[in-house]
Every structure is written in structure tokens, then in C-alpha cells.
Amino acid sequence: MRILSERMVTVLVVGMMSSLVLLSAESRPPTLSVTQLWNMGEDAKVSVFGLLVSLWAYESGTEALVISDESGTATVKVMCSPGPGSAPSRIAGVGDLLLVSGDCAFEGGTPVLFSRFCDVRVQLPSEEVLTVAILSAAWQLYEGDDIILAGVSTQDGTGGFRLHDADGECSIAMRLGEGVPIADGAVLVECILVLDKVTMTLLLDVSAMAPAD
Image (tube, helix red, strand yellow):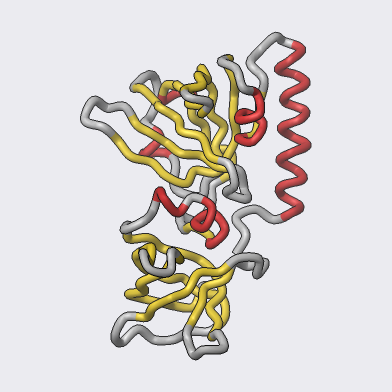
């Protein structure tokens, strides 16, 4: 399952580029993708769009977000402090396309965006599940966590099972728990992501599997 269709990506890119022209004309902060932000290399006030892949809250009320390009190959951390409007955790879910404005600071070559609650806007809601592509690219964020994955279940040549992304470009081995029914094709998988220290490969400990609607 792809979070965004190619057609939708094209529409969003055109829309974002149009917005960029208008924003530039009004001397407002530029609107960038996550990858473009990494390539900028200098502190600046910007707006960044990307998919929400992680969110957690601190006791102080500050919330930390991680947003990613659609491919999951580039991510950026957003530190969001309390301010006008609702907290991101109340309006956004994993997989949503966000537009976040704020001050970007490079710390050791890594960009970090500092924003307020009102600077986070949901551009396109999505199902609150991860894809195999995003998980593979940002697996360190989810190791040991209970997660729900969307993908395509297949049996490999050794009798084991793998969960593939919709386009088939990447996959992760699955270890089915006792009594977990096997479902072929598009599925939703409830699991824990583990790293096999011997083979240094990712593995899904699956506790539940069901056909995707």
C-alpha cells in the first residue's frame, strides 16, 4: 500500500511549487521537502512538508515529531513547543502529510526544526499505519515497539513468510506467533520490530495478521 498515489504526489508537488512562488514573492520562508532541507546546510526560517513517522510528548508539554520524505530515505526532527492551537498529537497521526513552519538549526550537520503547535498543519490525512518502505528506512525509530504495518504477505522459497511493500521493492521477514492465521496478499500486521544481532537483519515478530480492507 502506497501512502500517496503518483497522481496525488504530482498534484501536491505542483501545489507546493505554486505555494513556493507565492511565498517567495511575499518574502516569506521558503517551502521545502525534507531532502531539500538537508541539502540547504545552513540555519534559516523555513516551512517543510513530509510524512509523520513518529511523535512523542514530554512532561514539559513540548512534543517531538519526526517527518520523512515519502520514500523514507530522509527524516528531520521537529521540536514543537506549546503555543496557540492544538498539540500535534491531537490533530495528526502517523502517515499524515504535514506542513511544518519554524526555525531550522543545524546541529553537527543534522537539521532540527523548532516550531510551535500552531506551526504544524495537516495537509493530507492518511491511515494510521506504517509502510514497509518507511519502516525499512527509519527502523531505528521503531525497534522494540508494537506497530501496525500495511504490506503484502508472501511465502519465500524456504517456507518462511515476508511482508513486502506494495511496489515489491523492499521486504522484511516475518516470524508468526503461535496461532496467528496466515493471510496472503494485502494485509495489516500487528507486530514488534526486532534486529537479529547474529545476522544483522530486521525481523517482524507477528502477533496478529488480517486481510487489509
